[in-house]
Length: 480
Ligand code: MNH
Image (cartoon, rainbow, N blue to C red):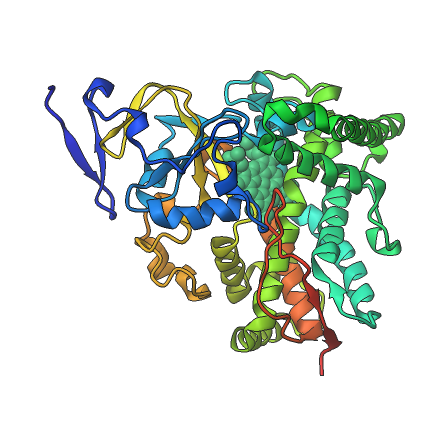
């Protein structure tokens, strides 16, 4: 046995060992959920609220260890990480990097080598990261703020005219889609003008769902799903044609008339390092990436936040008081929105309890040992259950209680790095996080200023890729 050098790391007393993998326990000694032939762990993973909520429930049993194996019907055997100690270790970018596993591999069918689904070593990731990051700076966000205001006005008008309970998830989805497409490529879906979801959105929704559903099908049953696969290919075609048309349209306009949006940025900004431009196919993927990564996530966040506010009268009153004090009846500026401290902490706490991206995947860059004990091979996918880590009592006392004050500066300081990851990790973290927060803060503040809510009853979640409440109808009234 080689001598172990163990060092203590941060406030959790986490142990990062420095031992040869041969010294450690094999991965097979990590606890696993039960498994059967063919369907493997499936019977233990199914739930009306979706696999990620099921994994969250299973996490309780494995929190002490910090992770567990889950044999999947498609023969993968991902490891799921559910403790802050493991999460903090995995956030170390010198040892771990993003890898594509599960749904992301399939989403690559339509998001290609766009930022979200690019491999960590892919050339276009570096190129697009350098070109697009400045587009998310505070100065750039000021430019998109009017698009956020404009999309929100349509929602407010729609809700003012509502005579029946509103379908919150559908309307938040319309809002965030209209916002990102206006800011991203000056396209007005005008979603509130029609009762139906735009065909593009129907295709996107179905394709996203298929990209997870396919993972829960034993390969033996694949022939039963030919129609679903054909629909999937048609949906991808539909999405490509809309986006390609938008790009063609833009290029046919004289450049001095182009609007200041992400599409113009992508078509005209060369990479500061190499001087190269993004190719047309990559631009198509980036636009689809913004739509995939940037609208259901934010709409889920807003839906959960509204559900919480509709149940929690005291918090509702505090939030409304803050909004009244900051900008009363006026349309706020972006700076004023950013000053809404309680609104921000309410959204942060919402993302703790219901992170809309409930899991992200990382893998070791070299063979390694985790938690001082388990030998993990280079490239072995580790699914970080963000939803489970966010409820680890190690840093979240009374984890199931909604309390925005957890995000006051003082308590936030003492939390380990891995405790809160709603926007992912390190250089592969969410590019759109500030965009999303500003958009959500503006919308939540304005809705609370304008409307009173009835209690919608207990929260039930939908089994969708990105988390959202299920069947959430809200009775709203103009503010008394
Ligand atoms: Mn977003 C990556 C969560 C809104 C664009 N986003 C990620 C990741 C998480 C995430 C988690 C990391 C995934 C991984 O590690 O595999 N994103 C969110 C949440 C919201 C959100 C919770 C809203 C709330 N995201 C947005 C918006 C946009 C956007 C809005 C665009 C305008 N996100 C991205 C892009 C990436 C990403 C682009 C990929 C970044 C990269 O890998 O370079």
